[in-house]
Amino acid sequence: MTEAQRPIGIFDSGIGGLTVAKAVAELLPKERIVYFGDTAHLPYGDKSTAAIQSYAIKISDVLLKHQCKVILIACNSASAAAYQLLKEYTASRAKVMNVIDPMVQYVGEHFSGKRVGLIGTKRTIASNVYQRKVDKLEASIQLQSLATPLLAPMVEEGFFNNDVSQTIITTYLQDKTLEGIEALILGCTHYPLIKESISAYYSHHIPILDSSGIVAAYVKEYLQKNNLLSDQLTTEHKFYVSDYTRSFVESTKLFFQTEVELEHYPLWE
Ligand code: DGL
Image 1 (cartoon, rainbow, N blue to C red):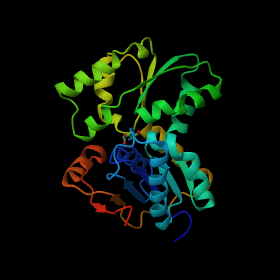
Image 2: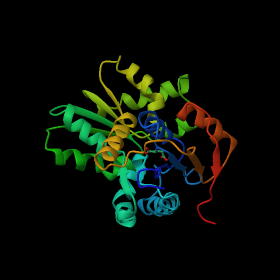
Image 3: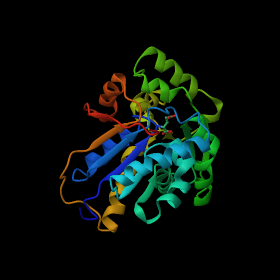
Image 4: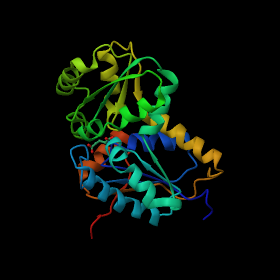
């Protein structure tokens, strides 16, 4: 296998990261994807940094075994907790990317001087990583961050576009923290599924920033610049989960838009 033919490894706490995998597969149809959903440890949003780091190392071992050229952390909570560590651990074996840097770069380019809201898990918001990275831009962006811990499990359970999800979304978005925002970052890879309801709350008047497309474009740019674009898809994508249930299989349809064949890959055996 040539360098360029090596797959792109993508992982998340569960199947939310499939929103990112889907965007990558659409933008880069010749790239093979190896996806790992750590469904045994879901949700990451409530876990400690140390726990997420230990899962991330195990998962990157799996992805490195598949000779992935890129390891894309398709989870904000894991990007916040484990990106630096994974970069050091992986070193020259693969390029490690996260979902936060491309979004921060995008916000810096398009929303300087503006008030930008951010919603995400407890882990992501408590890590302050978006705030630190946005501050570094020195673009006078006022970031207004709110933890919205019920949203990821709600989506994972297939609860969206119904009265329950609507009430939860509205209750969060009414929070004072988000008052006056001019754009809102969806800081969790589960949230693209509720983007429409969120946008409707703001009467579609402010941009709702979903990282999947932005991240896929970032991956493409990196591969192009480094002559790592694959010229043909030789083998099927692979989708692993650390805990296998029928409901995960069904949920993949929501996130990837087609049902994919999930393979059970226990992390600690
Ligand atoms: N998809 C994860 C993220 O982007 C959140 C889900 C979880 O808490 O595991 O943060």
